[in-house]
Amino acid sequence: AQSVTQLGSHVSVSEGALVLLRCNYSSSVPPYLFWYVQYPNQGLQLLLKYTTGATLVKGINGFEAEFKKSETSFHLTKPSAHMSDAAEYFCAVTLSTGGFKTIFGAGTRLFVKA
Amino acid sequence: GAVVSQHPSWVICKSGTSVKIECRSLDFQATTMFWYRQFPKQSLMLMATSNEGSKATYEQGVEKDKFLINHASLTLSTLTVTSAHPEDSSFYICSARDLGVVPYEQYFGPGTRLTVT
Image (cartoon, rainbow over all chains, first blue to last red; front, side, top):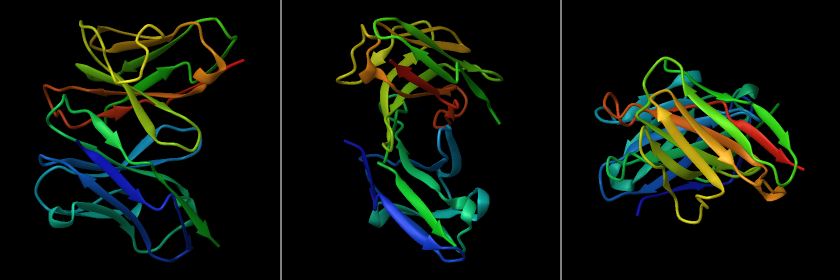
C-alpha cells in the first residue's frame, strides 16, 4: 500500500536560513509526487510536482525538490527562508493505479524566526 | 490554470440539520472529483471519490449514508452532510481531475469550514 511519511511535524528555521522539509514515500509503482502549502483557513496551493523526467524540480516561491528513487524520498528545500514561508506543508503521492487517488503526508508546520 | 470553487466557504448549522457543499470546476470538465476532510492541525483524509454519472466510492470508515455525494455533471459535485453533529465540524476540501487529459493533475477548491452547534 502506498504511504507518505513526513519527518518532523514542526520545523523551525531563522529567516534567511535553509529550509529542508523531508518526505519519504512507499509505492509499488512509479509515483507522481507533489508538495503543497496551506496557509491558515485556506485551501492547498501547489508548490511543485514530479511526474517524469528531470528529478530536480523547481517550484514557486523559490522552492525545489529532488526525487530520489533509491531513497524513496522527495525532500523540499529552499535556500533562504522568508517570514512569508511560515505555513503548513504537505507532501502527497498519486499513483496511476487505483483511480489516481492521492495520499497526503501528515504535514509539517514551518516556523520562521526573525 | 484550472479553477475549482466551493460554496459556501463557511457554514454554521444546528445539530440534526443537513448541509450541502458544492464543488465546481469553472473552466474544465471534471470527470472525477475527490472529497477530503481536514481536522484542525491535521492532514487531509480522503473521504470519497466521485465520477460523473456514477455512484461515489467511499473510503473505509466513511459513512456513505451520512456523507451523500452526487456528481451529476462534469462541472459539479455536491457533498451533503446529513443529520450533522458537532463531531462533523471540520474543513472540507474538494479536488477535481480530468482523467482524460492529464490524469495526475488535480485542482483543489478553497475549502468549506463547517461548524455544527
